[in-house]
Every structure is written in C-alpha cells, then in structure tokens.
Length: 350
Length: 251
Image (cartoon, rainbow over all chains, first blue to last red; front, side, top):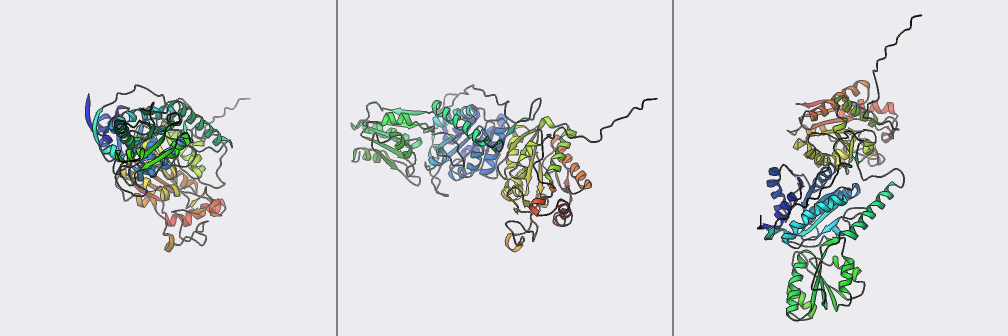
C-alpha cells in the first residue's frame, strides 16, 4: 500500500482491523471521535461489529463480554471517559481477559479541555481501577507508532491475557502524518481452553474475578497475576535511546513530549551541548534499569511531560540519586517548547 | 406364581443442566426455584451446550455454580452490556443475563434500557425481591412504599426517595423488545406459569427473534424478616398489587 497520509485516530482504527479486531465498542468524546467514526464505517465492511454504547461504562463491559467470548475487542476514549472505564479495566484484570483500551488524553481534571495532554499517566500506569493489577501501557509518539503499537497491543493482550492501554494524546490523534500501514503479525492465540462459546463436549467455562473458596483463592489469583506481571517486566519493556552514549544531559519524555525532546536534543547538539534522550515506549513495564544506566553520572536529567509531574516520580526512583533530576511540565493543554527545554538545560535561552 | 412386571415411568427428574451441589441460598429464597426452572427450560430446548449465562452482582452471583453452562460474571449492573458483547461475538448462542433489582434497576438502569432498546437478542431474567439481599437488606428501587429496610428504617417514603419502579411497564414503552412478562414463584401454579415465560424467552433467542424480558417476583424471607410462608403471601398480596402479573408483550 506504500506510504499514505492518515490522521492518528484513524491510523489506530485501521491498525486494529489489520490486527484482526472485529469488535469495537465506544462512546463519543473529543479528541478521539475520528476513531469510532472510522470503525463505524470500516468494521461492517470487514464483517465486524461497531456498536455505539450508551456510556463508557457500558462500552468497556461490552468489551468484557466480547473478550470473554474469545474475540479481539477494543474501546477508545479520552480522559474523562477513560475514568468511567476504570471499573471495567479492573474487572478485566481480575478475570484475566485480553482487551485493548485507547486513551487519547486531553486536559483535566474534570471536564478540562479538549487539547492534548499527558495527565493520565498515573491513572494508566499506577492502576486507575481498584485492586492490585497492572495494564501494559504503550506510549506512541507518532502516527506511525500509533499504528504499529496498536497491532502490537492486540498480540500483547492475547499473549498475557491482560489489558493493554494505548496512551496517546489528543494532538497525536488529530495530526495527519505519512504512515506505512503495519502488516498482520501472523501470531495466533488459541483461546478455546478458557473462552465462552457454549460447553459443547467439555465442562463449562467460567470467566470470573470473584474468588471466595477456598479461603486463600484470591491470594492464589493475585499471586499468579503478580507472577505474570513479573514475566512481562522481564520480557516486554520497550524504550528508545537517542544519542545517550556521550550525553552530559539526559532528557526523558514519552509520547508527544518525547518528540519535542528529540528536537531539543538536535538543537542542543547543534549548539555544542551534549544531550541525549531516553523515551520509554512502555510506561508499564517501565524501563527502570535502562533509565538508571543512562542517567548515572550525567550532569542533569530533565524529565519533560505535558502534566504537573507524573512520570518524573518513576524516573527519580530509577535514577536513585545517581544524577540530579529536574522537571519541566506544561499544563492545561500547552505543549513543551524546544526553547524552554534548552533554557532549562543550559541556563540560558537557545 | 406369575411375576408382576412393574412399569416405571419417570415423571420428574433433576434437570441435567442443574449441578448437584448444596444450595447456598437462604430457606424460602426464590433463586433456587428460578435456577431450576431455567435448567429445565435449557434441557427441554436442548441448548445446554450453546447457552452462556451472565451472572450479576448480588446473591445470585453464584448462579454459575448451579447452572452447568458456560458462565461469566459481570460488574454490578453491567450484565446486559457484557451479554451484548458475548452475543455480538456468538450470535448463534443463547445468552442469558440473570439480574436482581438493585443490579437491573438502580446501578444498571442505563444498561438495562439500552440493551432492550437495541433489541439485543438476549434473554433477561429479572429477579425482583424488593430488597438488596446480599448486602443485608437495604432499600431497592423496587422496595414498596412504607417497606422497612436497613436503609429505610421508617419505611420507604415516596416524598423522599420516590416510588418503586416498574421494570416491565418501563421497557414496554420501547419498540424493540419482543417479549415482556411479569410472573412469580409463590405457588405451583405461578411457578409453572413462570416456566412457560422463561421457555418463551429462551425460545425467542433460539429462533433469533429478539430481546425478551422476564420479571419474576421472588421471596427474600431473610431480608424481609418474614417466615418463608409469610413471604409467599407477601408477594401475592403486597408485591403483586404494585407489580401486577401478566404478559405485556409477546410478538
């Protein structure tokens, strides 16, 4: 198909279809409306189901049902709507069901505004719903990566029977960029041992998160979940490093902030300042060891986010005092500027 | 001496779809009867291997321990949404959402109305016992006027918290549902009638017809503080006065 121009939100939709997703459930909210509109137009053409739910709560529970039935299912929303989905995400985690949840973040708290933002890092990475659980959190920074990581999200979800959150932002979702559509990975996952299809020639299957008997049943479930999370931390951490080897200053950012950081690295290098960047691609599992290694002995680590300082907490834990960690954040839908990043590094405007 | 041959004819047996396990429900509770009726209907329709049950949050969350079919939990109130997701993946399977009054008419009102309005081809079994049983007897959206519960200790006061909601009448304002009936399980007669309604509701799905809703007035002696016998009488006299039995729609 070659390179085509696509909006981020639409690229997610097409990539989901490429990944074999045939069940989408969602509720309108800006700035991700292009995605449900795309699915509404495309899914019926490929034998799929698009359903506009009565609420975000209903949508995530429709995903729960479709996932329990063995299908690749997804929902998408933006920050306020994702808050509503958190109940379902916790139930999906407890029932160990695979699902893909897209959050094209906007400014908050509350209704906030409709500009892109990164204020839902805590919600996505630290839980969001109740109980001890993790979702895999992917942080795309370009339209190309929105598409690529969407395909990857479905494989990860099925492989680990886990919720994968694609944590983008309203700007990335609404910008148009050239994309090479990803290919199907060809990976298949046999769900017949646990999914619901009618107990034909076998014992009934049960999808449940409640564990009452024996008395330690819930402890056992949680133990197994933690084991799974440990395995994911070992195997699935993704990050990108840019000119880190000789860097005196290290930038750390994710998603759109990381793109701006990349430009700042180039600009700083041009002005003779040795800067590098570590961009976590998975926010959970977090590239703790990689950031620790990249940060040790630098003059300064600067974390740049479109929020009041969320990922910076994980960076500080990773760095553990091996370098000073500074933070530059933008609030309420503003984006970080290359100049302000340079100024923070060099102490004077670039 | 001639040997007399005895002709044996089984007139009643345990439904195949009903597990042989001790019942955890309280004495006089209606859930056990309703579970058995569903199992009988599943057996008679021959759909044990193609039925998927969605269990609610409430006393009957453990329904899947009794009904030997594929089963799924749903978060409180979300059974119609979960059932929707399952049915959209498996349109040829029979999907049952089993729900109580708090689940269906309080926390899950939106899901209830919209699944019905879409005409989802599912069967909703609504067990209305006018109280939250599992949490210890709080006021339900269907608690009767003046009914005393843990959270309406002076009796439900309509001036403060409104009147009991009539689910069948509410859903009967929608165009899509094909079957709406209210029944009870207080006597052999009403139980048999309820079984016929459940059969119809499930057959509608087998035939691909559409959304079926069966409300069953049921007893909660523990929550009501009544003897089992008093409880059936209370359903017959007090509940049916507010929730009249009968078929509202059969297309």
